Image (cartoon, rainbow, N blue to C red):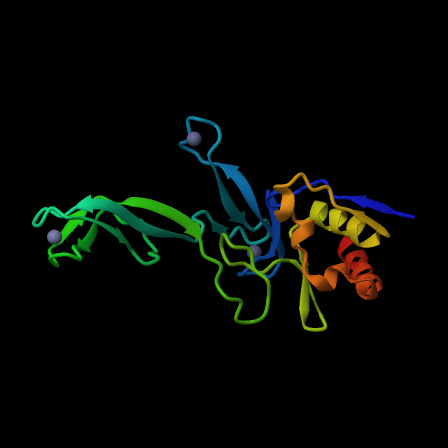
Length: 203
Ligand SMILES: [Zn+2]
Ligand SMILES: [Zn+2]
Ligand SMILES: [Zn+2]
């Protein structure tokens, strides 16, 4: 009997290298984690896509920005909060309107950056940084089985093969990669099919 014990890995643990299809030449390529060039602290990373076949390169992930702040209106002195919609460029200034007196003025906002998953219009699963289609993905009765890379595939394989799946909850681990797997991946009736897909991916 095979046992699988959740190592409490998060999807992010597999995101250092995400295998994707190059949008220019369709080759197998990767979005990789790389240090930020002007970082002094050693912790700042970004994700870079570079195709080894056609040298197409992408270095600026699809971040979106929200400008927000808590301010006192210069005209009526009332306090108010503002928050922009999702913006494609990081704004230096943001023009907000006082809800009390309608006075408009520009503020230097706080910025929150985030990745916006675009909807996959062609039904394919994409990584969030550059919206590139994952290399490892396979449609199965309307669901898509997908993986970021080899490590991820190995981990999924161990999970799917196991007869006994042990969750290892320490309370806060509810969002591990395994606990978030869609139902069709967990179902015993799909085991054979999923393992066949994995076998093909591993070749
Ligand atoms: Zn840094
Ligand atoms: Zn390419
Ligand atoms: Zn005002």
